[in-house]
Image 1 (tube, rainbow, N blue to C red):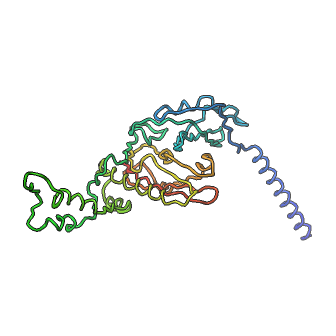
Image 2: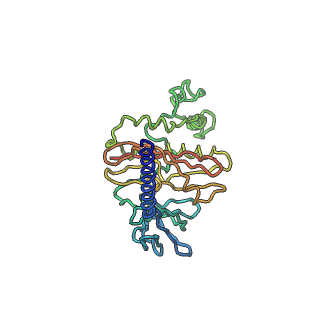
Length: 323
């Protein structure tokens, strides 16, 4: 009797398992897990920096196997400049089951020569972000930078220290001579002095305790210049064949409550062998996991790419101050 009961229980359990499996298969068969397909029209397309990105939606369609035409859901999440006269536009589309498709498209790119427009995310209002140019317009040392020169190195040259106050005296007949000319001596001394710029880490450390609301434009220019120099040095020292990455700006202000897509700050990305479409998908951005514009704060983003051969690019850093 017990054996019959035990056998009946086993049979019932088997039947239950079959029923549950059938239900799961039916549910899975009815679930929509396929994203829509984004299609682009044939022919070249161009984009000028500062233009409305919506112009790049012309002729682009998105079709879903279940929902049909979902073209209205298409949006452009970013436009990143490659540095070779083209840019990569990233498109997204979503169906009724929240399946998201992503596709990239290469477009002809024309830069707009106005620094205030560089680095503005395509889905961000211009007033949301302030980009500060990090290029040095002159060769002057940024304010606050320690040139590394000692007091001794700033003293007059040895050949004019004794009995000379540093003011040149005309020789007989009013003719100037090269010998003993303080101006020339000081120029030679200045040329001989090797100026060691502050490292980027040192510059960032000097601002660690500064409240975000007290940053000035000069502060951001100093930070941006240091990080840009760091990027260029790292890029120049890469082994041959390595991918490279560059940023439009290295220090930006971000308004509280605004949005920022870090990929929109990429100005160039290149690899000797991999296509731009492939290498764009290999971008790594670190430091943005806890990023928020809900509160004032300071953040450092690290960008790099790894190509199909495992070669890593230089690291480019972006300093963001939310205020």
